[in-house]
Length: 427
Image 1 (cartoon, one colour):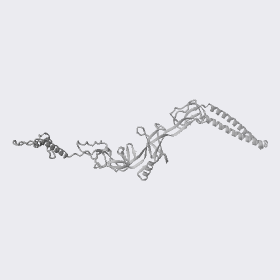
Image 2: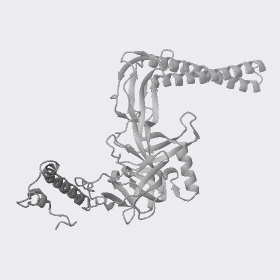
Image 3: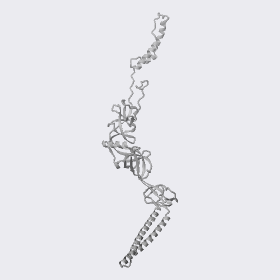
Image 4: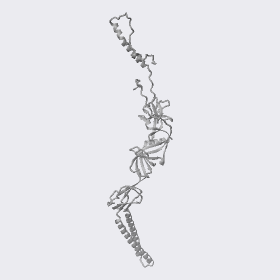
């Protein structure tokens, strides 16, 4: 069948083209008629070529099937609002250990970089001078107490003799004054003994808190405490550990408005969870709690300062580290989770491609409020049951037809146009 009523292509390709025979008695006159007869085979061949071209134009062209795209059917559900921010770790307590009395450092009694307990002996300063001072103060105290005892006995005796009028009133007054003065001198001597004992105790430098002790800042045998309290080492308490981070004031305000509108439940106080992200993107197993938020905005950065406390029993998190935190700020009561690759942006904002049931593609503007892993959280712009195009997006344009398939099925590339087919309009 040739479809258009045209003669078979082989009829012209293989048939000999010739003119009908002339009668034998008819002789062709010389001149123009003979030339016309010689050109007839050429004219017939040209006519056959034109006929074949016309038949080719009458052949119907097959339509290209719609391209396949991967879609994800989205449904509204409560979605946690998660923020990520850069953070800095700091100890919950820190103490500088200083030499409180001058002297020579005799020896270090702790392992640098190890955990120490409160009251543990860290550094020994030469105690000999302070022992001597304590001995002198003790002797002075004994002398003062003896003088005070004698003055007390004398005053008591004069009070008895005064009653018998054997001692004048002036002598009694003098003895009582000596009693008071000697008592005061004894009290001062006791204070000197206490001071000498304290200084002797300062020669033994102990840990004021429990935590990790840094290296000794001075060498053994060095003279410390001359005119100032020399820094010997630092102790930091890292379990739990503080996490400091900032959040834009605009996000904070947006959350407050959404909460006032009833769309978001904001986590208050210790209910706000904070997680640390490792360098490989995994989460640190222990969960921290938000324990402080500032009520003023940094005029330079436009951000609000926050602090969380995180358990660190293995002490893998060290003060001074910079890391990434993931904060659960609240719960969006009705939201959609969409892969990040499906969300596109232009000068007007964010949008996604949605395939209708008949395969027609449409673009929908969406409001992205947060992220969870590799997904965006969308608060508005989508409807429950929408088929969001998540793969093969390059084939989806508003108004065109596509073949939606589940996102886990790899979309097929559109079929190649047959040879000779006209190019699409606009190409």
